[in-house]
Length: 183
Image (tube, rainbow, N blue to C red; front, top):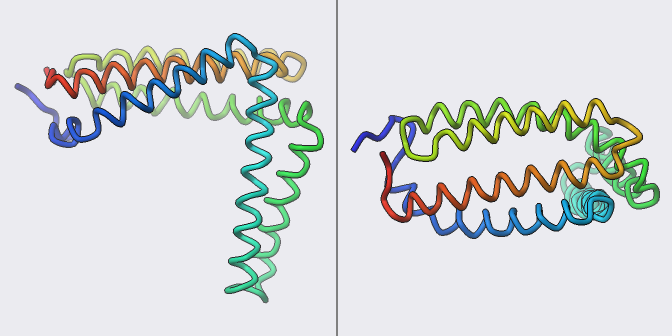
């Protein structure tokens, strides 16, 4: 068996179950977002807004306890809370803003997927990461092309497709790791 320097076969086996479970969850979330893209877009932006508020509240506590006199720490709290509130109050505008951020994310994800595929080569399934990278690149391009008017449905579909593909890759690679297929 040939294992590249970047891959530890014991770690692959150790995390194979987690990879499969994560893949199933991502695939289900992706399928739901594809079936109901507007609901998927809204759900994502509302979740993101709630997450910003939750982190802002935790950061408020931390700043109050440890950094009361730090203008930068309080500015961060303010930005987290305001961003979260704005996403919850105006989720449609939030979808347009998130769409352009996702385009940047997908371009970065494409690069990371290409690199991961090259790191996994010559293991079975290495090419799936390359396919995922091509898909992520195309999704980024589509988001830029359809922005801002198509963002309401595009975010849900594109995130759904990305989650679905990421889920399949995790399931397949987790399966291969669990079965000991490393070459």
